[in-house]
Image 1: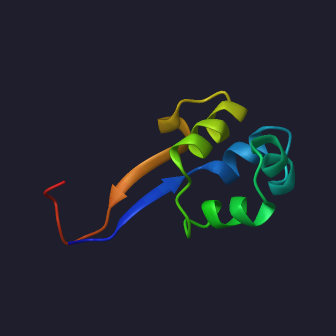
Image 2 (image 1 turned 90 degrees about the vertical axis):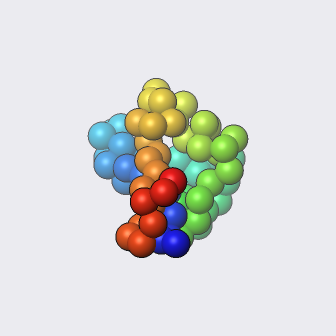
Length: 77
């Protein structure tokens, strides 16, 4: 079974929104800057609630910020 990864385009969205910093985004959604760093680097998948809050900051749908891609090895899901 391949590794399942939630990808995101938060970094691009931050820069498109007046070069928003990770700290500014963290403050907007109520988490630490380190949490935003981990999400951007795809080391941590946010809760559904946090994913919605992040999407709302950028006025996007969840799919406009996050997307799911399964790694190689299993195409059944």
